[in-house]
Length: 178
Image (cartoon, rainbow, N blue to C red; front, top):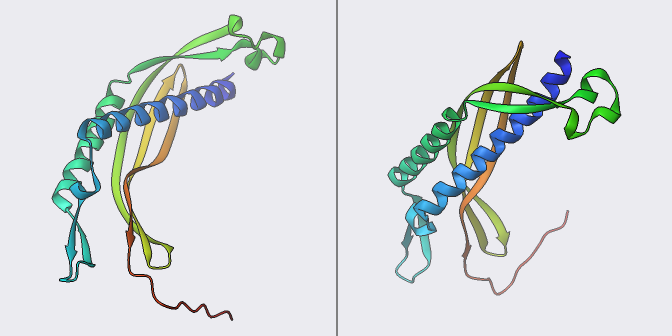
């Protein structure tokens, strides 16, 4: 019975953890209403072309702290959940896998989240650069279900802001094939 509880409970825990993270991050992002200009300083040359893009570290670190606190706060309120275990999975009879024959096991859950804000530049065409600032969230949860101890983690990447920086298009373009 233990392997079934570990498998079904682990999947349920991972699903719950992912749902909590998604809801929390979406609520905080919507609440703060972040724009690209909130996260970067754009320095321009006298002719108006972009000379440099620098991140507003203090703003980003505060934003990261808000997201991390929000995720950890939600996970700390997670506490207990009921996980339905199909009786058919325990005793090996598929006809007992319907919801009528579930055994509810209470899971006591403890979790935490770690966030990191990442800035990435990548080519998006001739003299075009995509700048993406995204959030990496890694959350772990531990659950006790009867005599079973479960550990699950979820890694999610959420785009916070993205823009395309367009430079001047050259008069000619040469690609060397080797």
